[in-house]
Length: 143
Image 1 (tube, rainbow, N blue to C red):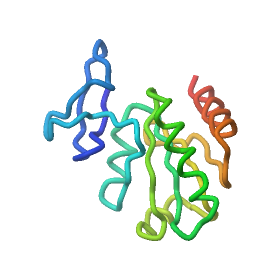
Image 2 (cartoon, one colour; image 1 turned 45 degrees about the vertical axis):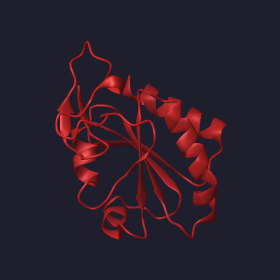
Image 3 (tube, rainbow, N blue to C red; image 1 turned 90 degrees about the vertical axis):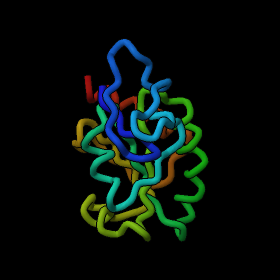
Image 4 (cartoon, helix red, strand yellow; image 1 turned 45 degrees about the horizontal axis):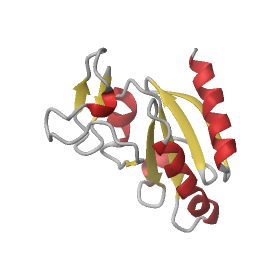
């Protein structure tokens, strides 16, 4: 399994018999997997989306967006309890090009990626139960 380090964004190959949540990066020696959402930028978005073998949920948000601010704590909490998924955030004010390329038209928008392909997306503020239900539906689409 390949996982991109959430600190230095180096791609690491994790043997199938090793727990990815315990692996250390071969370059920076930090933990490869991070249960907290990874902040992505112009130079890190595509490598993170394209090189990770685990599904990734990206929260496209903005500081001025009230629903984005309300959902941030829920997104972090769900990320902490989902060790088979990766979570990332894109600040659409700072990373406008990526938001445009991802066709983000409303905030917040969550996009579920797997093997560099968009599987699903949902826009608007979600509570914890709604987010978990949507994630389960996305994971089921992978089966």
